[in-house]
Length: 490
Image 1 (cartoon, rainbow, N blue to C red):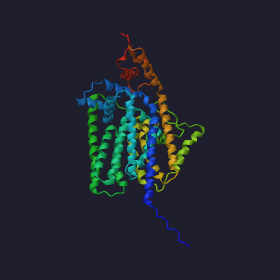
Image 2 (image 1 turned 90 degrees about the horizontal axis):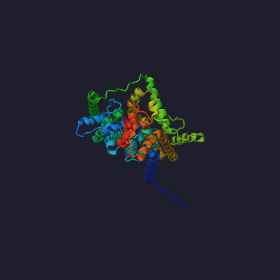
Image 3 (image 1 turned 180 degrees about the horizontal axis):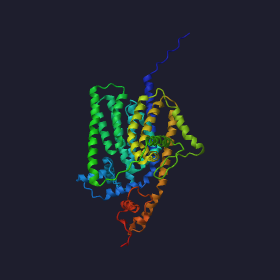
């Protein structure tokens, strides 16, 4: 009887390398596909002229005799609003002024900028999620990036080009979070200083990110590493200096800017209870971030300015979306649960959201955050990060996670396309008004057009008459052909 041939040794390193190559191939293909689907979903919005509220800003930018050598002019552009109120968002307003000055009133350039910023933010999100999993590069965060691009509840912030400053703000915050991970990994001071500098710049865009500085000590505590007293003092000093600088700049602006530029209006606060904040948060998270992004067919369509989301969902199709979500969630590897990482993600989400929750609830009650798509941007970001983190660690371990993920991404792309289509239908009266003026301009080359005869369909929300508002809009597009007074009036 002959002895059996010895078993060949298993090369575990080769198997691991092959698995890593397979994973990289899949997620890179997914990322590229998500990018193409993102462009497919938002392509119809390329022909939007503007959201109405922008025209008075742009009319001011176009008509003010700006002198780049005068500090007063720069300060004016950093704080002026048609509301006549003071807000300390100097880089946000300067961003919009610069975008208009470079790209002009045409929508396509601003639309391209907004889409480009969304892609940039998706890549930064991918890098951050990969770093949280302890990897270099983007591969282990590309699932999060794909979800971020295609989750539909935030569609309005993508196509409302005036709010590209919110996307620039997001890029700064994500860049800071990436640098924090670099500091945790190698303990060099450069990345920490860079993270704090990016956070400081983000505060000048939008004060909602102020509490994000507080997550730096939380991240160090959750890292499991020991930090010396000297390192702790360095971290605290790095946080304290920019906070004091920001406070000093904000106080100086508050004392001098309103009187200098006539920005004395104040948005009144509502009388709210603690329950109002709980209700606002519940609706924001459940109706907006969760249900609005899921594609579940139970979200009603709201008004033109408050669009919810609903997928093609009648009859049997109503069960397809929840079954797809259920199939994906059932394939995730829940044990061992990454408690520290998910807790950190929740902490950052809370820090990035708390001021927005408080401010919008005080000024608008408990309904606005859930119903206006623009305010789903922040919760969607962290929903995508958390789902992407959990899904990516399951792709290699669970056999059917990848097909369920691919099907879900396709459904989300359809949902985003439908959300954009709903927005476009709501804006149809605006397109028709602009088309009427375009016909007159084309057919009567020498005629003057009275703006009040072809008013824009949406009245402004502040103290500018509709006729004047229309004049601002049409004047930007057609110049001297548009007049305030009826031709021939004495």
